[in-house]
Structure formats: structure tokens, C-alpha cells
Amino acid sequence: MAVTPTIQNVKPVVGASADTWGGTINDRITETYTDITDIASQFNVTQALAVNAKAVADAALPRAGGAMTGALVLDSAGPTSQYAAGFRGPPVVDFTGTRVLSLPDSGKMMRLIGTSGGVIQIPNVASVAFPVGTTMNIRNSSALGGITVQAVGGSGVLLRMAGEGATGDRTVSPQGMARLTHEGTNNWVLDGTGIT
Image (cartoon, rainbow, N blue to C red; front, top):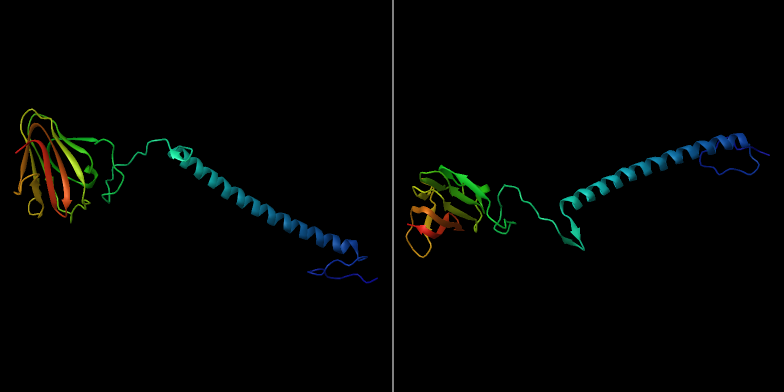
């Protein structure tokens, strides 16, 4: 009976040499085993990454029945939209002297400390991109001296007292409290207690 001299993709012939076919079949089994092992290894790595990512997400955002049960803690970067997630209470930022407002001040309370007055300056949106609707609280906890709230010089920012049409600098007196709101591009309104 004839023996198949080369195997390649030819099916084994019944009665052919066992030595010839045995070596070839063993080679193919080894190649298949290597391929399956590689695939399994890649799957396990991918699966491990997926499991790890889920564990990280679950730790960051604990859930019960599909509802988030933990607090979502925001960083101090400031919003990029008036619809961005905000604070439940205004974090307090203590200052003395002059403070030029910046995006991370959004939603916070600027509190003057010390025994003398201070200045809060509002830059225009060309230099600080405050979204419309940005709000900040201003608290004068100083016993002496007011807080002058003003536009950065030459910036084109208009500051208006709520209930009045006039624009210009305002002063928050000692122990006064005010809210500053960006209501339109470079237009701000101030309201509160102890403002002149």
C-alpha cells in the first residue's frame, strides 16, 4: 500500500505509515495548543483589566440597586458650563488684600479675614472664561474695613447692584454678605446685605 510522503493539508490515509502521520499530527496538536494558550492568556488579561476597571468604578461610585449611594467629590477646577455639577455648600476661600477672581473660585465663598479691608476684582471673560450663571458668595468677616468689589481696570466688565440700574464699584461692609452672579457676558450683578 502506498504511503503518503508529504502531509501538509492532505487528510491521513488509512493504512499509511504511522511514523509519518504521528509526527505531523503531534506538530499540529502542539501548534493548536500554543494558539489556544495564547488566546486564553489574552482573554484572561482582558478579563482581568475589565474586572479591575469595574472594581475601581464600584469603589469610586458605590451603587445599590442601580442608585449611587456615595458622594461624588468634585475637584477644584471650576465649571465649563452653567449646567456643570456644583457644590452643595460653598467651600470657603479665605483671603486678605486683593483677590482677582479665577475660574476655580466659582461656587465658593470668598471670605475676607484679618483686621483691614480688601478688594475683589472681576476679570473679563476674555481672560477668565466664566460661564454665564457663575455665582460666588462674598463674606466680610473683618471687623474693620470693607471689601471693594470692582472690575479689573479697563476690562469692560459691568458690575450692577441688584434692584438698581447704576453700574460701578460696590463695597461690602464689615460683617456684610453678598452674592455675585455672572448674568451675561461681562455683566455681573451683586446682591446681599451691607452693600453700598
